[in-house]
Image (cartoon, rainbow, N blue to C red):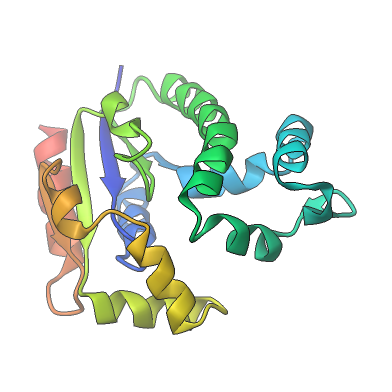
Length: 193
């Protein structure tokens, strides 16, 4: 079985950028957030979401995430309900991915809530991507239509960098001052030995 590196960090930290560098090194990467989005197109997941949160969230069979987001982000009980629907399905996809890539030296499980969802328990090592708060906010504002207030609210509901770092074997500082390529290469070389 391939060794698993869990890759996590808060919104705007740059997890996807780091994951893509590993991908360029021919390391298979499981993008949990992308898989979760795809799961919302599965009929069973749609039925569960509609039953729990209302059929008004769907237009022509498509989940309207801009309607779901405000209902769950900022309400921890509603978020837990959504996670109870989606996390088990994402985990099934992860197991399939890991089995498919079992002959690799290592694979990456990239997930914003890797530790909170206990996905780290399937990982051999953990890397946490960090960035200063203002850098995170600017990055998210540039790539999304979220307001500063909406971004700050999402950050408040995530674990702090310090809390995530407590689980880390490696910390990747993505502050636009340190080379993330150099940091990724150090981890890659260590895991290839």
